[in-house]
Structures are given as C-alpha cells and as structure tokens.
Length: 270
Image (cartoon, rainbow, N blue to C red):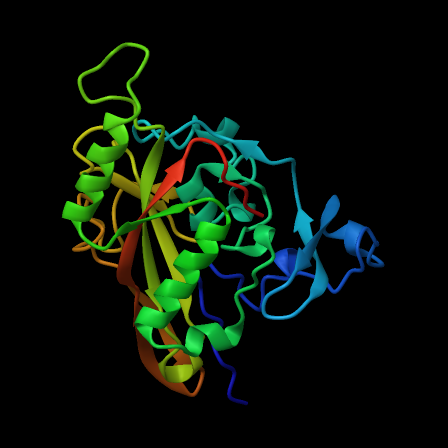
C-alpha cells in the first residue's frame, strides 16, 4: 500500500488536524459530539467564496496581547503561546498579531473570508495578494515589500503618534509582521502561508521571531539563524519522504511576499 506522508504546515490547518477543522454548523447551533473535542464552537458567517455558517472550535477565550516590544513569548498573551497552555491552538498568524483566539486562526475568517484549497493553486503573487487582502479585512495594514517601504511607513506613522513621554521617534502604536507564502506544488503539496513578527518595530526593525504552526516560538529562521531580515531569511522546509514507496524527501519553500502593520487595536481574528 502506498501511504502518503502527512505534511506539516505553518499557517493553514492540516487535513489530519481534527481538533481545528471547521464544521457546517448552523448559526448558534451545536454539532453532535463537537463538545467532546472543543469546549466551545463559535459560529462564523462566511460570505466569500460562498455564503454559509461554519463552526470554529475554540479551546479558551481570546487573549489580546500588547504591541510586541522585544522577544518575550512567555509574556505574550498570558503565556498562551507556550506548551503548558494553548500552544497547539495558536499558529503563526496568531503570533504575528499577538492575539491568541485559541482557534488556530486563519486570515480573513473572522471577517467572513475563507481561504480554500483552490486559492493555494494560484501563482505566488496572486496567492500572496489574496492572503494579505484577507488579513487586511481583519484589521492589518499593507506596508510594502521592501525594507525601505517599511521604514518609510514607520517614519510616517511615528511622526503622527507622539508618545506621552515625548520621545524623539514618536509612538508607533503597533508592530510589523512579514508574510511568506508557499504555493501548491510537487507531491501533492497543497500550499501554506507563514508569518514572522518584528520584535523591535519602534527601533531598528532588525529583530524578528516566528511560531511554526503548533511548534514553539523561536527568534530564528528555519535554518537556525537569527531573523534580522525576513526577506533574506531561510524559509525552506524539508517535509521528509513523500511516501512509504518513495523515499525522496520533499523540500518546500515559503517566499517573502510583503510587510504588514498590526495596529494595537482594531484587529479581530479567529
């Protein structure tokens, strides 16, 4: 028998991850036995690509963290990114936003936009634009795809947000994130997305960290190097042998698409 090896993902929900699959629940309706898996099922109204109500399993109440100021995963969102609490239920998108909805959140889902398997069949630029646009629906803001664009956005925003302490740089009122996407490809790789978060957005913007799927939060890239620039960081993943009849290892790569800004308030994800 040719058994295909399950892939691991950073942002999207893996088909074998039964704990975070959405249901076809009616609004405010309960799904039989759903309570055995998750304490609460949140009904979410989807309008794109089609109108329907889905049920999103939530393992604990949402916790909103403060704007990222330094690398401190244990202090973020009351420790919800750590193994002892709700690490498996908060992915790279949650970490990027510094919000733990404990639902393995997806860009746009809270706002009625649902990423589908066919979306990851799109070319790189189209997929990146789609994921970014869905994140915008959740409250994130487009910045650009260069460090110059990021620094220009930062300068403009700080100039309009003086801090109470009257610092020379001004108050940023949020933090930056970087979006990487991987399109569907060989060996039935279905595609994925990934986010990294800037830990010194009010400073040099040269210190970043990330949470790879349900794994631990780290401040290095997939090659173990400190993330100083997401554009040049290594986002390549060895998925291992394709199947038990094909021992070739599949290597997938996430490409940098853009920088986005996460304001301190007004972001809503699930």
